[in-house]
Image 1 (cartoon, rainbow, N blue to C red):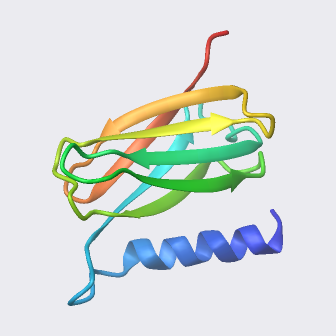
Image 2 (image 1 turned 90 degrees about the horizontal axis):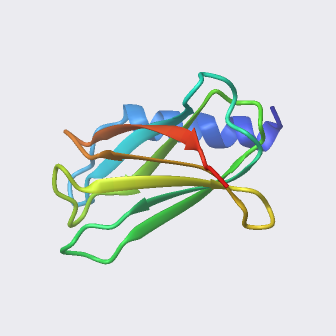
Length: 118
């Protein structure tokens, strides 16, 4: 794993373990994994939270093709329990490789990516 990826994952892990700070909005923390348990393929992972009551939040992370899970954190403002959170994995050319979704429950979520059928 590249050094900057390790630092990014370590930072995300630290955020995931820290509680909310007074005055700051809560966050939804989660992880994305591939359906068969293998490493997530190389590409760009987009995590989209689109609550009905607020504009959507989208987080884009790079997958180096060597991690079984990728941790993420997005702001929870306007997000209710049951709000769908969708993850897309795309190649550099924009071709969809995999997709998965889950609902926000208690500020945490685990999304399983399933290969896209073309």
